[in-house]
Image 1 (cartoon, one colour):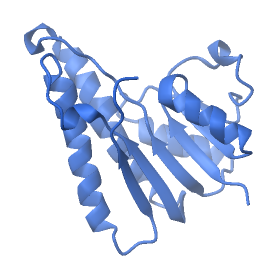
Image 2 (cartoon, one colour):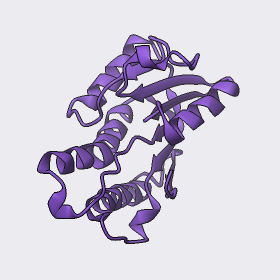
Image 3 (cartoon, one colour):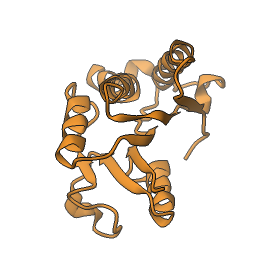
Image 4 (cartoon, one colour):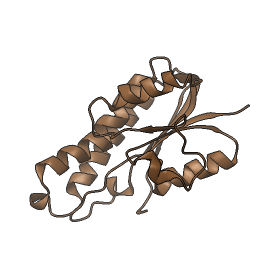
Length: 180
């Protein structure tokens, strides 16, 4: 049986590596990123019917992804990998307020909003939801205050959601990779 997988942040790093692996395994992919599709021609799995270009800092990102899936007549998502993230670092006073707002929007609001939007019927009943956080949550470091706060907020959401959905057949996983 072919799995249907949605990956955010699929245009580079962890997301791109996962997309390559799942594509090689024959999965049906739906990929989300903010880069223009014309820039992604080196990979065969980035097509107009598989790639949703959206900035996850945009408050309407979740509805845009949901509408894209509906337009593609996507089957229920078996695996949702919420990987997209921003990693702004540096002394907190040096970070512009707009950058802090974008960091929180992408690292916290977008995964929460996407989970909420897709749980309304676009996830398979026994879906596997993977949230990519960061090792910095448990390993404080100078110049990472805002980034660590955003990932700690994500962790709090995921841990609470795991308890809230414990009676559902959904698997929720929280991963803390190191630097990529």
